Image (cartoon, rainbow, N blue to C red):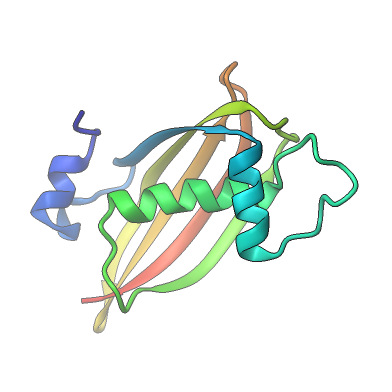
Length: 138
């Protein structure tokens, strides 16, 4: 399946404009995925409640999809990130992650690309929103 925006990515970053959907992915976050995340980052924030997905796990998945689908090269800097977690997500929930370009500009030798992230649960209710700015060498 070709995602909306995939052909534009193949033509280069210059073709990505505000509003362009660059990634759409779905994940079922089960106990195994949560355990892998917790082990990888040594997150102990939800030590007393193992029924919910750690919020940063959700953020990491949504950003990972965008970075992979944009084919971000080495040498890229993650300049800023704003995240809002709207509601807790129980384990074994399916989530839909969508990333859109909000700006794409060149300044000097760098491309500044802002990406808006939105994550929704199975009912379509948004559970996380955010914006990441990345800097790519021109």
